[in-house]
Amino acid sequence: MKDYMEIANSNIIFILAAVLILFVLVQSVCFLIMSWKRGIAIGISKEKMLNAVKSSAIFSIVPSIPIIISLIAIAPVLGIPFSWMRLSIVGSAPYELISADIGAKSMGVTKLGAKGYTSLVFGNSMWVMSIGIIWGLLFCIVGLKWYQNKMKNIEKKDSNWLAILINALFFGMLSVFIGPPIVEGGIALLVLLSSGAIMTILTFIAKKFKFDWINNFSLAVSMLCGMILAVVYTGI
Amino acid sequence: MNYNDKVHRIGRITGIIVLIMIAMIPTIVCLKYNIFPPFMNLVKGIGMVCMIYIPMCAAEFVTYTPMLGTSASYLAFVTGNVTNLKIPCALMCMENVGVKPQTEEGEVIAGISVAVSAIVTVIVVFIGMLAVVPLEPVLNSPVLKPAFDNILPALFGALGAYWIQKQWKLAIVPLTFVVLAFALFNIPSGAEGVMIPIMGIISVISARIMYNKRFIKEV
Image (cartoon, rainbow over all chains, first blue to last red; front, top):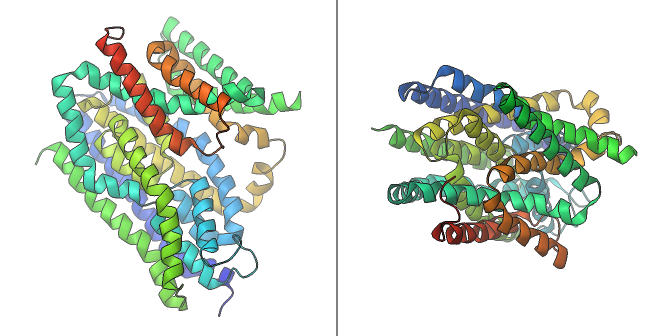
């Protein structure tokens, strides 16, 4: 049987991964065009939509970089093409590691890439990683229409409550990420407070001087400054 | 066909195609190289992952899709990184443009935002893969490690500061709960997936009580 790394880095996986990623890219472009056309139809100005494009593009660069770090970590054990595909679409770095590991353990191998990690085990990891994370998408395909109709019903009854409900869900999520640094303290807390302070200052400047363009950058800049300050605080 | 039905149809069709393609990769590779993991081991592995991720995905679906709207939800659940990328991106975008989730305008702006975010991520990861050799020493350098270790506090510090100042009444209860939970109990890192739906429920209940008591009227 072939060494599993030969299979993991084979052209066939590269081609399959590339086709899938290309499809997702085309799908994203189609959704972008569809939303843009709809925006024009309901009277949203091009300027507003262009601002949405700019701020989304600028913001998304920095949080995408850690994905490359995950790629560097995963590729030596699962090969470049499969890792590239997994990290480009549904899932996230922690998920890929956990599921690949479970794939290895269910074949009796202690961990990823350990002794006994044969092509058979690699095949198992591929299957486990692929099937384990499809559920969010599956729930959308099966239940999103029904669930969105429920939201519309709430809106019809009480649109104020729907807006509050959505914000409350968001605050539930926010608190899960803000709480731990507050409890742990240290650099994480300093970073949390610093990026919060920078965001507050930027928002104030934008509002005070009517520099609306700042809003397109404020989240990205605050986050980046927070990360740079993490390096500074660690050095002190 | 109205716009909403059209989005659902396209979302479902493309979603099913993606699911088939995801399953095709291991199928074709296993057939070509004649590697067939024993059925029981395969079922055991998939079962273990599903036990963790089916409830987690269900909670994500319930929590995130109302914020994202229809088209952004289909795309976010295809492209992943929902918590750390798509949600912050779409919500800040809607805020900057001055529209609300679950409105016609919000649907459009969230759709644009998540699509652009997905495209950027695919491009960044692609460049990262091509340039992995020169990038590796930079990204893995000990000097930059604290920056990447603290990306979530940096992101959520900025997001939190903005939204808490705007709607502090909604923030008090969930934030107090989380701080107390992490201070009193030994919650392992990586428990976010479980904590998010729990805190979502607590937050919604507290918001409802405040709304009924007219402490919060609108947002």
